[in-house]
Image 1 (cartoon, rainbow, N blue to C red):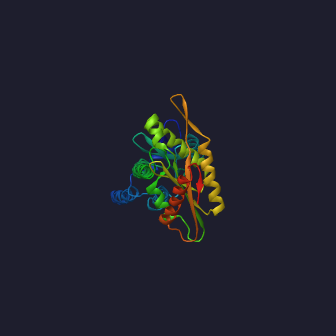
Image 2 (cartoon, one colour):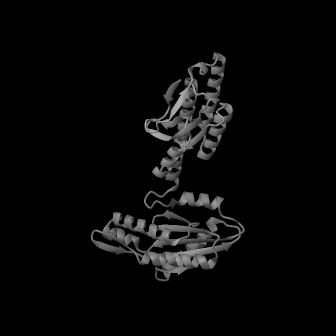
Image 3 (tube, rainbow, N blue to C red):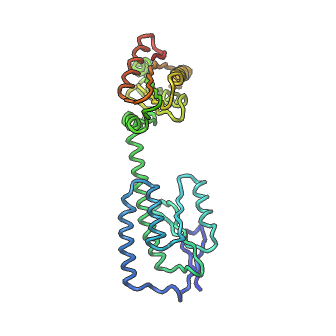
Length: 307
């Protein structure tokens, strides 16, 4: 009886291997497994959704490769979750653990329980390490794609969604049988602040405005930087009274906050317009109506809310 560890050093899980029962499979069987692995690898490395990737990988592992008791345990980006995943890996006294990693990035483990009815050989290790390599590439590709999507839909200055993302959401998530509100606001006299204190001060102010506006909305609302000093909030399932209250809260919270810049407190106000509709939502039409209300707030002396 030989003791063999197939894990990272810190995990110290050993696997029993019986040399007499772990003979190399026939060549034809190895060739069939190699073809299966190549087909699996082509599929797993081309997916764009991690949930779908994990579902397919588990099916391939248990059905196509016949490791029917194997599990895939992925880490997420937080240490606590990684610690829970490691404890899950250690919960079975005798098991093989194959790390899912690509270069210096570790994504989780493939865990295969081992007992007298299921021996674990060098060939098993090679198969699972190849499979884990394909899975790691697939996970890495998906996470990079998610980063690109995030960058493409996020305003780099304020960290909130951008105009493009706003219209994507408007096209997909706004129901036609409920009430929807839309708020438009911009910073009063931002040009004067930029000319007096510089554009970096103006940028710091825009970040603060975005933070205060976000703190004034509901979790179900969508806040976006529309362009320049103009912001938009889409409020699904909101009656006209709620929209008005949130619009006023945004205005008041921004008015009562300042950013410190070179030893002085810089205050600003915003002018706010909003519109509301019950039923079918045309985001462009709703935006035009809210924009007209915003101009009315400007003409009324700024730092006000109009509908």
